[in-house]
Amino acid sequence: MMEKMIFGRYIPGTSILHRLDPRSKLLFVFGFICIVFLANNTYTYGLLLLFVAFIILLSKLNIKFLINGLKPVLYLVIFTFFLQLFFNKEGEVIYSLSFIDIHEEGLRQGIFISMRFVLLVFVTSLLTLTTTPITLTDGLESIMKPLNKVKFPVHELALMMSISLRFIPTLMDETDKIMKAQMARGVEFTSGPIKERIKAIVPLLIPLFVSSFKRAEELATAMEARGYRGGEGRTKYRLLMWEPRDTAVAGALILLAVLLIIFRS
Image: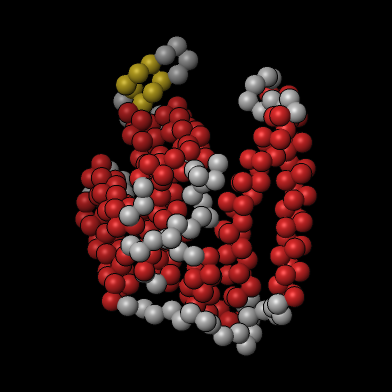
């Protein structure tokens, strides 16, 4: 499971995406999440697809690894597609059954919304795959630094998000170990009636929660033993440097937004 997990995982590398300032990557992801909704036709979604493919090429990551990492959200993508396919009643009927009609706009929106979801997963995954949790925390804290003036706990929030991302692969690995241990004892997770499958989840959740709380307590003890007292008065070992390539990333995002506005009509 760890080999296929991409959420919260960092892959060391020397690509241009790895060398970007974490602030520029965070701003790019936030901006991409906003402008992706500008796409509304074949041309705009094709443009987004080419743009994300170019980013993946720059990251120098294995495309098969990224596609395998999409499997945990594949069921959600399929559910979104069929939700639009069966319940969107706009446009001409292209296929009719005795109990349901499939409309042209339903098929179109199902493809577009599913593609939008996949593109967002790829872009947000590239953020964590090319950025260490420490630099991601520093970048997030730097972006939200103005909120310190209103007594907002910026450092604590950034640290909490970083720890959450860091422990996603760990918890997935722990889940995989517990599932294999339960299956060795005869528990079936993939066969039998739905009621029995739900009951089989209970022996999985209880040890997972116990392990998570124990891990959180150990982390808190380790932080206290090292003198952690929050972000006040702390200095940075690695300073963030905004370089011309980071400005180019912002320019590319603005250019993409302009092109989407032009082609959406």
